Length: 268
Image (cartoon, rainbow, N blue to C red; front, side):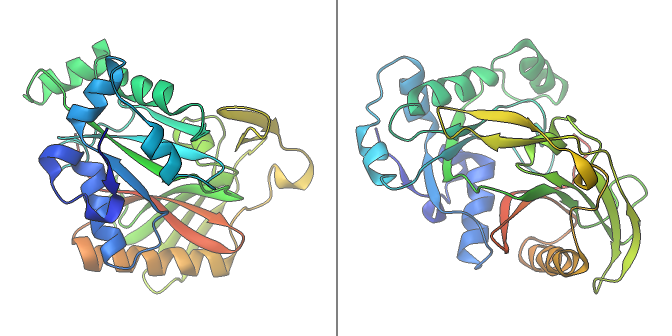
């Protein structure tokens, strides 16, 4: 099975929209976790049980856990995001769980919901699912960042965040903290959520687990002014690199900010 370093995944017709955007971000020096891209014909082969993942597992030697992300050929484009349609599998052991994760991502493009979404947008019926495999950031705090308010269009950052991996936010498992930040990092509003659980990777096996959050952290703000300033700076850099309003997923781990996913804000 063939795979390439993520930064080289510039052919959208083979590696998909998500891989293309992350490759562009890496080449621009944005803080994207390292990884690899697998072209859709090779993912198809894995789905049939024909792919040999030994070389990829070897390339990931020393990486404890990875994220296996969808990157369909028409995903994260200007007209369609496929947000909430295609799967991401977190907490995968490179030495044991890659095949099952690839098959799960491949299958997610063929659910009734995903196929109906394709028909609604007039896309080709048969999906072509490439995959991104990245080192999983063991996030202390993670969430989503819109560089412009996606509802009102106001020229301000809208940030939602919670403890642990960002799955708690994107899957609606908690009421996240919400922040509005002006360009230049002036905080306009802070609204504490109810963050009574966190998603973390499992140390004793594949995947992730939900752990209880108690005490003052449930309603205590998970981002401070320094982190909000770092997010504003990341938003500005992404706007400069890609142009237009951006929908970003981020994580903080050991004091460092990581860009996990990026797409244009779309209505699709």
